[in-house]
Image (tube, rainbow, N blue to C red; front, side, top):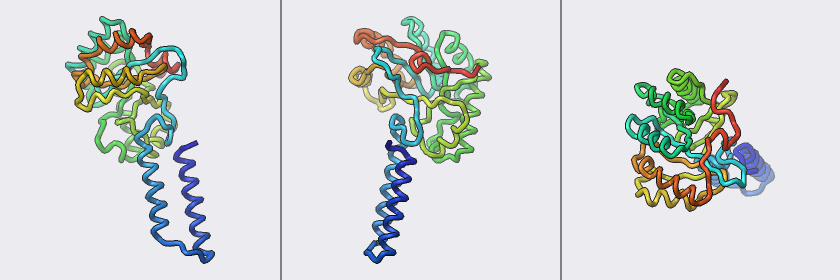
Length: 259
C-alpha cells in the first residue's frame, strides 16, 4: 500500500543500501543521496494534497455503494448573506447538506448555525482560522484549532461536532499527530467543483455532473455566489441523472455529533 509509512521504510532501506555500497568500495556520489532525499520529500509533500489517497492517514471521501446516492457539503462559512440564501433554497428543495464552518466566523453568526441544525442540516468544523499557514502549524497549534472550532460550534448550537474537514483538503504528518485520539472523523470529498476558481457556474455545474458517481461527497462553498445561485439547477440535474441527495452522516453511516 502506498502510504507515508511504507514510503519512509523504502527510503531508509535505499539509504542503507547506498551506505553499504559505499563502505564496500563501490563509487557512491553525494548527489545520489541528495536525489533520494529530494524524491522522498517530493513524494511526501505532494501526496499531502491528495486527501483521497490515504497517504498520510485515511479520510472519509466517499461511500462504498452502488446505490445512486450522494451528499452535498459546503465549506468556509458561515457567510452572513450567502449562507441564509442557500438555506432558503435548500429548504424549498427539501435537500440536506453539511456545512464545514470556520470557527472564527461563527461569532456574530450564531443564529445561522442554529438555523442550520434546526432545518436538519449538519455542521462540521473546518479549523478555527483556516490560516494560509495552517499546514505549517505545529501539532499542538493544530490541536488547539480543532478544539476551539468545535467549542465555537458547541457554544452556538449545544452540539459538539465530530466531522472535521482539513483546510484546503491537505493532510500531513503534523495534522495526523494533532488528530490522534481526538475522535474526529476526517471528512474529505470525491467530487470537487473547484468553485473557488472563478469559473462560470455552467462550467462548475458541468464538472460536477461529469464526474458524478454513487457515494460521492460533493464539495462546494457557501461563500461563493455562483455555488449558491446554481443549487436549483444542480439539484434538478442530479435528480435527472437518477441520484438522490442524502445527509452526509447517512451516506457514510457515521455519527455527526458527540452524544
